[in-house]
Image (tube, rainbow, N blue to C red; front, side, top):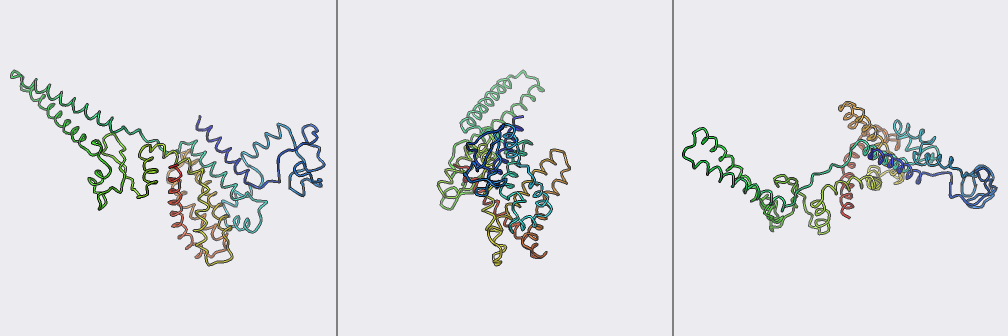
Amino acid sequence: MSEIGEALGTVAEGGLYSRAVEKTDGEGPVGAGRLVKGHFAEETCLNCGTSLHGTHCHNCGQKAHLHRTIRAFMHDLLHGALHFEGKMWSTLPKLVLKPGELTRRYVAGERAKFVSPMALFLFSVFLMFAIFQAVGLTAPTLPDTPSRDQIKTAIAAEIKDQEDRIETLDERLADENLEQSVRERLNRRRQEAVGDLETARAAAATPFVQGASDATRAEADGTATPDGESDTRVIASDSSGDRRMTMNLTGIDWIDNGIVKKWEQNPSLMLYKLQANSYKFSWLLIPLSVPFVWLLFAWKRNFRAYDHAIFVTYSLSFMSLLFISLSIMGILKAHTAVIAFAALFIPPIHMYKQLRGAYGLSRFSALWRLVVLQVFILIVLVLFLQLLLVIGAF
C-alpha cells in the first residue's frame, strides 16, 4: 500500500512540475480586492493594476475574474496536479500517431493548442517512475555481504568443528572390538570430515579471507599492470569470496576513492541512488541528445538547435509513455512475446515517422538517419549512466 501511495505522490509531483513549466494565462498571486461571495469584484488587474477590458489583462495576461473559494482551490489543485486539460487531448493523439506533424507545427509557432514538450516530458517521466514504483520495478536490493572478520570467524569455527569431529571418529576407530560394518561407516564419515576440513582450510587460505591487498589479488587473478599495481577493485558478493565483482580503476583519485569505494562499501545504497537520480536528472537526456541530432543535419542551415530540442523532448515523452503502457501490459499478464515485440519495434518506427514529418525527409534520408540515431542513442545512454554514477558519489 505504501508503494501505491508513493506512486500517487510521484504522479502529483510530476503534474505540478509540468504545470509550473507550462505556459498559463498569466495566473499570478491573488492580491487585495473586494470579495463578493468568494469572488473578486475587480475593475483593475489585481496583479499589475491595469484597467481591465475583457476577460484577461492586456498588460500581464492574468485572468480578470478571480476567485477565493475552497471549491475553486480544489479544482485548481486537481487541474494542476493531473494536468488534464483540453490541449492534452489534442497533443497525445498527435504524439502517438503523427509525431512529426506535432513537432513541425509546434516549431512553426502553433503552441497554444498543444502541451509544451517540456511540460509533457516532466509529466510522463514522473508518471513512468510512479508506475514503476507501483508495480515493484525498483532497484534490486543486494544481500548484505559479511565482513572479512565475520568470514574468518565462521571459517575458523568450521575448521575447529571438523578437527573435533575427526578426533572423535579416530577415538572410536581405535576400538579393536568394533564390528566391520560399523568400522566401514565410521571410515566413510571420517573421509567426509577430512574433505570438509580441507575445503575450509582452502577457503581460509584465499587472498580475500587473508586480507590481501588489491594488488596481490590482481596479481593472482592476472589483472595486475606491468608495474605491479592493480588496475581493478575486487568486491566480494558472497560469503565465501568465490563470487566477486571486479570494477576497473581509472587512476583518477577522486573517482577510485569516491565512486568505486562507495560501490565497494554499500552497493545496495548506490543502486538505490542510481535509480532515484535516473528520474531526478532525466532532463539531462535532452542536452545530451541535442548535439547528436544536430550532427544528423549539420549541413542543413534551415534547422536550428531549438528544432532539435523540440524533436528530442517530444520523442523522450513518447518513449516514457510507451514504457508506461508496456508496464501496464505486464501487470495485465499480456503475453511476453507481445510486450517484447512492442518494445523492439515501436520505438524505431515512431522515430522514423517523427524524422520524416518533422524535417520533411524522404524515406531514404529518414532511414539512414534512423540507423545512425540508434548508435547515437547508445552513446547518450552510456554518457547518462556515467553522469549518474558521478552524481551518486556525492
